[in-house]
Length: 318
Image: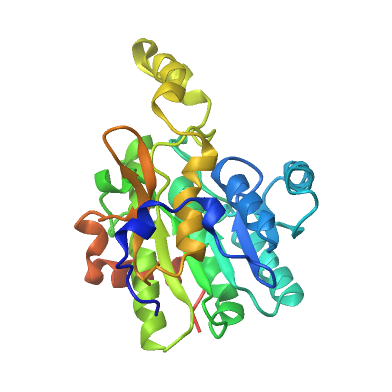
């Protein structure tokens, strides 16, 4: 496990241009066709990594690949794998393809997500936000772990959100039957991301694996994550006002990707850590170690969520 960072000045001056070269490294980034996922893939490719864009929409993924090639001058190898996190069959197909192509992986960045959706179910019958944001990534990580576990300095980075602080894990009703709310479901899924990252790190250390499990959040970033219908369906025009004002109070996706890139590449990072932007008086600062909520640090709940996730997905970790 990497040693905790002790050089605050070095950490506070960090930006994506400070990343070490990533040549010979292979990174899988879910949801890499737009927003923070795209900026993460772009920055890694610009440092020479082979980057796999794991996306649901292949046309958008191809367009993203072309943009990355254009912006990096063709540096780095960009591949595409179809992945729909709302379908466990798709997750398994993607994992099979990835293991066949890349027996060794250095980075898995669990970035893709959905936010504030209308109530609905995934192909496998899971509440959509919990199914995509947590269960899909839980299954993908377990299926890819053999390709990561013995690779020096390999990392699994799970992107959570500040919204986890409002989250409560309903272990007796994870699908929120009869209790659904857009924000409640989203916050639960983001809390699940952190509990998953915590329990994964515990298990990796117990197995003496080379891989680190790290979590991060982007801060307030202006992306297209929220479903467009939120504005239309919010009462009294509040949604429209919020969507109009949002860009004035948020950072762009490139800055939002900085904590992900820091968690994925910095030698200062510690397994089990949670990284986010530092909020300074004047602006949003570089990534730093931040504190998740008390609920996100509950090891007993993390273990119980893990058991239920294995049962729901049918994926048993090696």
